[in-house]
Image (cartoon, rainbow, N blue to C red; front, side, top):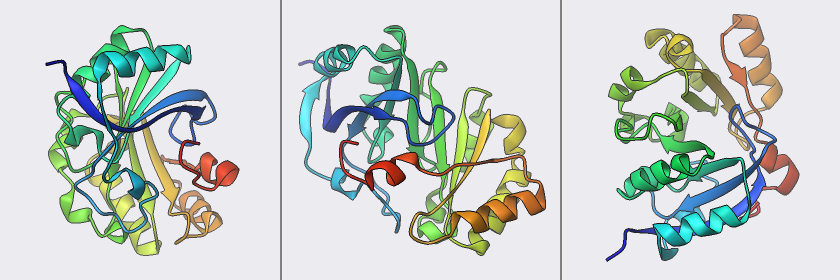
Length: 215
């Protein structure tokens, strides 16, 4: 039997965040997630989906003729066959990123992939799930993201930045305001006041398409 994955959607849009924000990107959204973050904007990917072969997924991605491909979820690494999918996408010549929580082991992910590791803040209600062993695996090709819900979250994220030397381990450290919980200007003011070595990111797709699935 061929290798398969359960897929919620494959679509072509603009990357809304990370260091390739604004660039046309194919998104492969895998189904399922073991976490339940209180601000989740992709809960529709928790269940359902369609079982598809890796060959079928690769063929659909190629049809868009993209430069950039993002494997997201849900939580992609909850499905073991995400690992060979990522390798095949790299082998096909795409610039590949993986959006993953901080809860699952990233060690098996192809080194060519930019691993965007979302460390969960206390405001997410899932901070207890973070796997800090992942911090030792980060390289300059990787990115660490914090979704900030409050001043307490900001202070917590700043402490993790310092504790794990994240600005030296990863290529990017991203602070993003939770869209419905925190004013982006407040977060910007805190970052400037503390002169943090982080990039403030706003989720472009929310401003353009207001969380419409497939956009």
